[in-house]
Image: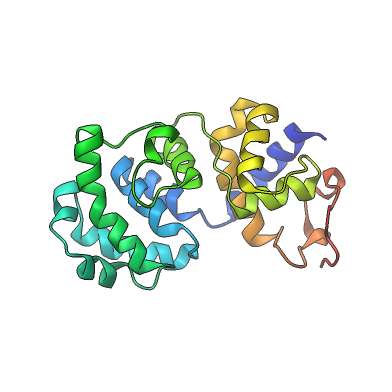
Length: 215
């Protein structure tokens, strides 16, 4: 498979698409703390919903201290209706304490450290490392997992397995940006059900694994 060709074509293709919320936050602020919060909010939530919730949260939260001053109920009200907002509000409330006690008040910059934070799984941790700290990390969400298998580039069953295989196989120069490119591509063209194969700019490189119906 010509992964170099696919990457080059899709990078150009998605420039006209909406920018995923976490990338947008990084572009606007370059602030690891805000990127971390936006990433936690974005899990299992549409970008449009996350964008509005992040705006409301950031209007009240400028620092770790201002976050710790809010009650769980206040955080819930600010971030509603993101997915699992009650759990996320509890995680956000715990964050300042854990970051202070475990990491001296600084946002950790490695995946192994970040997954120790409340509400942070491997996907979120990799995204924060790549977006906030501009370090090599592979964030695998449902889009990356689905599309890499649909291409035939991988044959994996879980996002974790996909991440591990990509770490072995994908050239490191693509690690930091592959998520935002494939998320945009997956939301707009390479959709989970009935993808727009007739419009796909990389169709000739794709094995179309498990694609039963397309447009």
